Length: 596
Image (cartoon, rainbow, N blue to C red; front, side, top):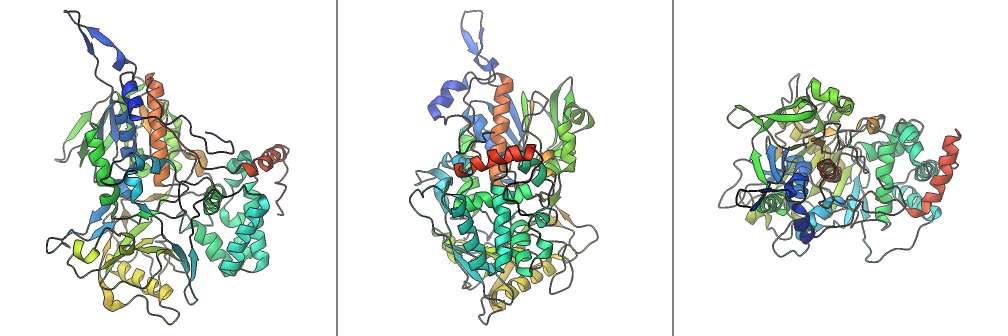
């Protein structure tokens, strides 16, 4: 991984012509010719790859492999797109309209992402020269919605020019203004928080990977000693709502790395685009369906409804994948190479003792933890006067974040295109905290029934938005709601969630596996695989799939061009401080800016 101060790609970008020219050499044997009795030559078939999982990681791997001429089959147990997909609300379509659009959770594609937007550029979309990436739009603002207090609305400008270089003082001033002026936290607490961020920004990689990875964010910023606002916004707000991990457990390395990237993005440094970007239509319409269509045109075969049960291992290689077909029968699928692209909680169930013994990093994946972060959509008969962007209900017990979607879909007339013509908008909400009592029933989300969850979330939204004399959400405007079907058994002793999210308590960094394994024809892709962003994101899933494809090509001895992998931007202005800190760290000394 490149650790220089610039955002360098690991290999040069490749054109379609380059892919075609190199495809014959993929896998080494694909370039060989076999002489026939008549003296003619026949090219051997390209190597085959079984991609196990059809989420963002699996589709990315299929995309990169197919462009390089390999034969790819994707096996997906449920629906292509995985957690990133949108879905239809059953029975909601009337009068020739499409069903109401729903989703596991709203999409958020910030400017710190580089690899995912690159893939989007390469997915054709009618009338869009930049492909699916041209379907990204930038909300104009965001807000911290406080219960019992005036909400703070923050504009999100995006200058169209390259900003000048930064000094540490520039970063310090930006952070101080954002926290002290905007959020109203006592100045001495603001100063301390900014100092902690400066400590991290100037920490060398060794200190980040060892000391800060072992330090909870709550402890790093001394949240226990600070005010309620400090705790809710700078501890809980930056972890539970964004990283989906409890602040008391979250790795400082993970939280602060994300914070550093977002601050630099807001300052216009090393970004692919604006700080906040979303799709301009339901996810499948704007992205997943065009992607699948494009992959089919490249020769990718899809097997949907096929569930991977076991990855078979013998004689030093993966020999087959045992997969349950839609009829309930089990088949042994064979290929030259296998990429496991399922979420970690599902993937590790398919790794038997022999496979785990062949590579210890597979066993370490058992230490990776997942938690609930699930979406619910409310359909409204009136557009609520909310902001044009994401809102974070910072005081809500269930850590709610939300966005009102119709205003961001300029090519859609919501009541004319979706549902029964009565619903005019969709308020999409993510519920990040499922183990804390709510305000309506006094029970956790897991202890509530599906209907009680909907009523509780609605009550918490109203508490955050209707609390200063202005009625924003009206009960009379609530048309219907839809809760992610991956959640089951709510209100019973054993609720389950089919779509949990990887969380990042201390030590997680050291248990994340590499894309390449010790098994020569077996590779890993997914948001749990070790990549530069170190966060369970679509960007991480995309980057890990690229790494898996590169490892496969390396192992096969292919001359095909490698995938580009762009790391997070590293501000060159901080590199001298990091070099100085490396010396201090090796001498057992604290960071020079660390005030304790």
